[in-house]
Image (cartoon, rainbow, N blue to C red; front, top):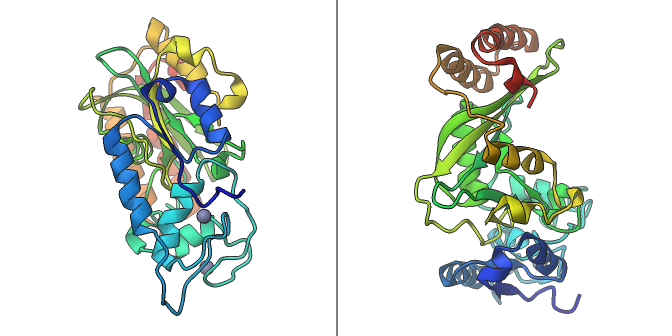
Length: 318
Ligand SMILES: [Zn+2]
Ligand SMILES: [Zn+2]
């Protein structure tokens, strides 16, 4: 409690690449687990930017550690940088406008630099997940989800994944989420699964899992915490097997990484008329708020029937 205002970094390639010890460090209070000196430099530059300023009339106080004298923009940077490794004090009033239940989600999306907030939610829910495999050594990318999102007390593991933003397609969403959460630029190389929940309702929700590889296999994954994630790491399937189910936000990595490695799950082509039709359909549906739910559902289901005719039945079950 007394050191919550201190930014604590573990700089160790060993810790960085051991998924169990890494979580233990976050649990013991490390704000960041760094894989290289450059990442520590980046983090310290941000720590400097959110150092309290004296003499300002309007300042705010961090609801997590009590640090005061911060500007609104500084608290926007400070919150996820210092506190994404532990659960948040959910339900605390917003330190700027006092809105109840204002911390940390309302604060992140209603205050601070507009460019650093989340994009407005698409009217049509759709999700892209990405299995990133490094072609040099066969390792897979795991992301540490901010603890306040997964409510696990620590930043639990998952894949880079998220909502398709307005006007985006699935591939663009997967590439963006991998850059934001994993710090890597990737090329999507295939489709691992196509799933559709609520197919018989007016609110169907498609979810696509891709296989991808980094454009630069030697680029280190992200390690400076921010709103998107607490960092990311490369993992072998042997190291993955040292983790338990409760170390994950959801079990997808446990299911997917070994299946991809052994070839039990083969990536399917992106280069089909049916998949291209889905991409165009998503860009339209997520970007257009004038369509009714029923219109969106029937447009999506027509395109989905094209996918079912094109792809093997097994990938609709993954
Ligand atoms: Zn704080
Ligand atoms: Zn507010």
